[in-house]
Length: 193
Image (tube, rainbow, N blue to C red; front, side, top):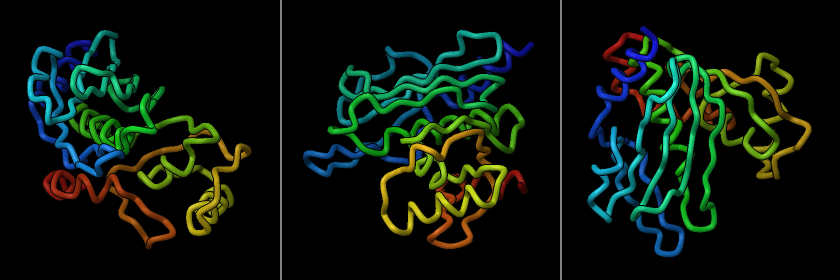
């Protein structure tokens, strides 16, 4: 049943235009991003794509591509309720790749009936996940991440661990951003989350 559910969520998002746009750093051009179920659908070279696969019993692989080149990757488990891994393979050339991958993750989670996504943040990704809306189970750790963001500091390698992205939780101010709830605001209101 879980494998069917994972494939059904992929099919439901097939050809879906994301809210997030990937940016080419050299030209500042913003690319539309389309979620697709098959690489053969990546035909428009002016767009970026997230290719969604459901090769595991309850998991997904997301491959970000532009012009046939893989620029990012994410691996999800438990029907998209857990983000196992996320990478921007071309951080010097592209920005917002991670945001696009998290958006697809959140949309797949919602389609599978989940209102949050778990993840394990490592040192260099903690501020990114915090900005997306993920929080630690510990208020002191969240405050330390807020300091990193508000003071524009480098991520502290000592701040890592389990986080949870509550998809519907709204931002409480610029020192505590929750971008995913802003990106998915229409879906959240439709689902009354």
